[in-house]
Length: 206
Length: 209
Image (cartoon, rainbow over the protein chains, first blue to last red):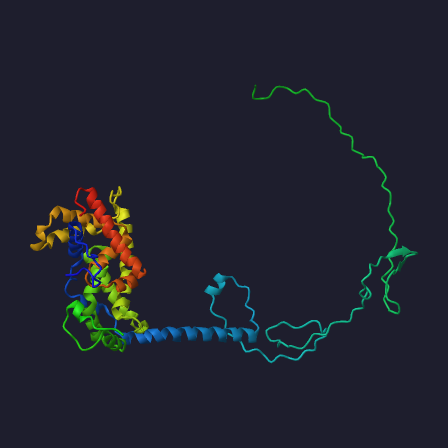
């Protein structure tokens, strides 16, 4: 019996050692599987019909989880994240869940300062642009030159700047007065040491 | 594409090819897959045996290979023969099993044996001795035992190629696909394994020619 379907197994060499190798390999490998392999394999097979719902259920579960996440994100974005009281976890766990009270209709109260916006749960979020107060440009227009401010008579001197601009001069800075330091003697209170008084031996003896 | 392998495995002839049975099994016909198991059980078992060396381990590997093949049956496109595809799965399973056996042997065997290349091939030696036919008794039994022992000491790549080629169940093309080596490499490994064996036998005093 040939060792392989390919006729080049022994390469036409038939020395005693080649024959010994052929025989040893054949005896090692020509072992039949134990009987009942088919039965044992089939008993361990899962019916393919039962696998399909599991296969589909994975996708259904993943899709449902993704949909829940998207809905939760949309809900959180629309409601702006309702604030939760700063209760400790133990108090939260020990208390009954708060019953949501219906929010009374919010009374329209005028906003005095346009820069201040109400941040309560009942305040609706508006996307209107917040008007900013006008601030005068105290630095002047942007120039490429270096401007140096000098002091002459308490007024600033602008060395560079385009003509015809209406700049607001900065507030005059009062001159800096440096008071010279004067050394002062450190006065310490006199230490009075009372004279020692000879006392008798202790009562308990030495 | 796929051809029936009845002539190889010796099972009863069937009109359906392997590919036909695969299609039926993919449609849920478990009995069709059972027929595939029957047709390929010997090739799968011997491939596993060539790798792990123990019939008991090879039986476990064969079962795992068939079950894995059944689970992955949907990925089989019929581009290669079913047996080739199945043997590739078997070989991967067998390699994993051999690694775990080697780890276990390294863990329990202390100090390491001098012939560290052996694993379950001592058991093979007993099988070879017990299943010797009357015709084979012409050959010196001591020589046979030495050959079997020396096969166990071969490098794994050479030993795998030699034993797979000696199963009588696998072509060189199937072995090449199974172990992921070019066809020429497989043939060289078989030839090299034989050369090394003969060299070692010559060192033991046996005549080379």
